[in-house]
Amino acid sequence: MRKMAVTLSQNYALLIVIMAIVLPTLCHSTEEQEMCKATYYGSSYCKSFPVGACGYGPYGKTANGGYVAAVSKLFRNGTGCGACYQVKCKAPECNEEGVKVVATDHAFTYDADFILSAKVYAKMAKPGKEMDLLDCEYVNIEYERVPCKYPGKNVMVKVHEHSFFPHYLALVLLNQGGMYDITAVEIYEEATQEWKSCRRAYGGVWDMHSPPKGELTMRFYACGSGTTEGKWIVASNVVPAYWKAGLTVETNVQLS
Image (cartoon, rainbow, N blue to C red; front, side):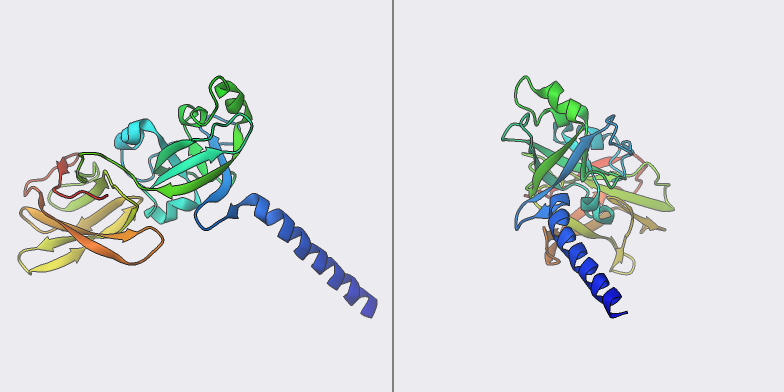
């Protein structure tokens, strides 16, 4: 019995050593950068397809000049929607600059942290090495969060297509600059002079049943990256009284 206990103890110690060696190679983190994996839609390693889990609609394909990405753990139940990352691959075919992408979708896969379009994936390659990199299909990457920049553009508020006037209102924030996470959205009700909280329906979509009547003022809570501290930002009279699904309105607010 004692010999068996010693053997089990030795096996447990060996397992700890193996885990200490292997786990860092799966996803090594530093203070500012993370090293994980990336693939692209259409590769044999990609088990998901672009479905627009952030709720951005067509904007989710055209934001940042079309340099967008689906993310897995960085999705953070929708809080990660709209965040920007500098992604660099770590292979002989890769250039030093990498590519800047905006998170607009959720990657339903455990094999990669970023799923890119083939065009964006190839952008990480050295000149003339694009097809060689695409042949890799699955590559080690280094990434870090960086500020989103939309020069000259204010935050836009879109009335989501699933909205139904006047009973159900769903809103999406676009052109989310800087390094902010939107963690709460509220609408002001003139009748009660109170702020009413919206629910995060999914991704970057915030909704409310039986919303206040009239022209709507809203505010959103913008947190700095990696912190719960932030600030309320008010967009006055941003949603017209007779809003309709698909309407997009520019606010007077910029995030940078």
